[in-house]
Every structure is written in C-alpha cells, then in structure tokens.
Image (cartoon, rainbow, N blue to C red; front, side, top):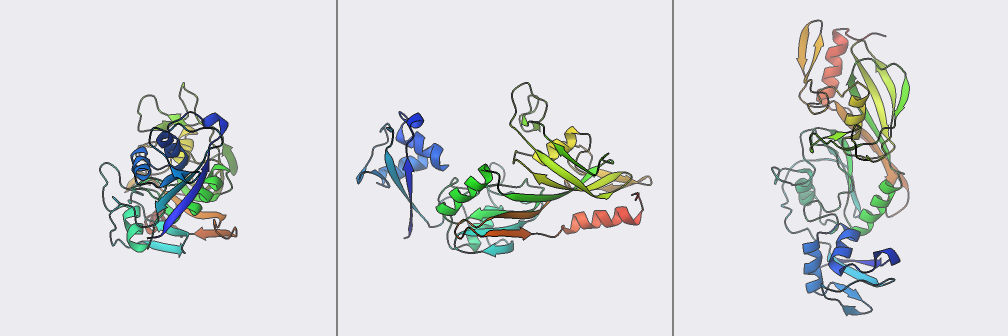
Length: 317
C-alpha cells in the first residue's frame, strides 16, 4: 500500500488547538477521519505518535500519513467521462451539464467523482472522503473543464494557485438582454442570501466576500448577448449572481433568472438549464510547474440554441 506523507508546521497563531481540530482545518480531512488516523498511529511528531487530546504548540512539526488508495465511501462507477488529460498527479475532464461533482444528500451515486474513482488507479486522500482531490467545482447544470488532484501534493499546490488567483478560467455565457458596453467588470461582493440560504446574493446586510467578474461581448443580439466571462475570484454561483445583479441573468437559470425559455417572434423555445459553459482552464502543472491549458467545445444544447436563435434572426448586428 502506497502512502502520502505531509509535513505540517504549527504557527504561533494556531497554538492551543486540539490536534484533531487543527489537522482537520489544515488538510480538509474530516475530524472523524483525522481521529482514526491518530488512533492508527498515522500522525507523529519528533518520531512519536500523539493522542487525540494533544494541544498543539507553536512550531510543532507533524507528519500525517494517509493511504493513496481509493477513498473508503466513494463508490467507483463505470460512468463514461470526457477525459481531456490524465497523469499520476491530476485528471482533467469535460463535465457534462446535469452531473453533480461529488456525492451529497440526494446524490449518492452517478457523480463525477464516482466516475473518476472508477477511471483512476488512485485518488488524493485530502479534500474529504467523498470529494478527494476536488479543488474547485462546477454547478450541476454548468458544463465544462474541471481539474481534480490525484495525490495530496497536487491538491495543495492547486489549492494554492486558486487562492493566489493565478488560475485562468474562461466561460462562455448566454444572457438575456443587450449589454450596453462591449466589455465590463462586475465587482460586487457576494454573500449568502438572507431570504433563501440556498442562494447567493450581492445584496446582503452582512459583509459579502470580494467577487470580480470581467466580461466581453462575443456576439451582440437584439434580445440576448453571448459573452465571455473571466473570473477574478471564485465565489459560489459567481457568474450567475453577477449577471443577474446587473439585470442580465443567464438564460435558463431557474434560480437567479427564473426564465426557462427564450421567446423568438412570439414562439417560445424551452431552455432546460443555464447556458453557462466553462470553456477554458489554465494553470501551472503541480508537478512540473509548466503552464498547461485545456479547453472544451460549447456543448450541443448550447450550440443548438444559438443556431435556432440565429436562424430566426432574433439577433441584430
């Protein structure tokens, strides 16, 4: 059995915490899993194991050993996936619309991670038992490029790149209405909605987190606009919330736009999901440091809708 070993140093500001709480915060592994690792002797400092009640001290150095085998609880399923790239460190896939990224309440099977667990010989041990190696995610009804780490070193490297905002992400989005300018930037903080905890909002009395979306028009129409959006930050539902906040919700977005159709010359065309596609993802490979970039073509449903709209000449110049 191969093992991943990580070195973790306690900062002055982190001293005094129980070891299980400290390591759970530092690694993303659940506290119960950390406790099991401690009981199995997989957490050590200065050559000796520690107890669950140990309180960390400034400059303590811990070594956390975890199995690099498939994570218990994540059921591998032979689900076809659009594989864009794979090596021993990362896997890059083209996630289809309608697929949940990892198991959760109501979606225990059929997720992207169930598929990756089947198609990969190993998974990272960090990130949680049902989402090992997941460093970012796409909404269920958003399609496009995603990267998942296959070992812990790659996981922490990619997390750092996302945190430092060096990841390049480009989306193709079809929104209602005609945007006034050819380019723009939306810089509105995003926080949890106070009226609906399942939604995000730019209008909250509590302080939201900084969020920046830059966009440019790809094709200007009379009743809709096709834009390219680039993320300066990566907040939950960011593009959907930002587009809705300026009066141009994503077409088909049931949560923030509430319209599930486009009307063309009095004919209503149903739209079954938000027209949002993560087209390009670029980052520095966590093992080699080389910049790599992956792209995915606009999916069939989005391309077909654009074709229908163009055919009816709903759009202007």
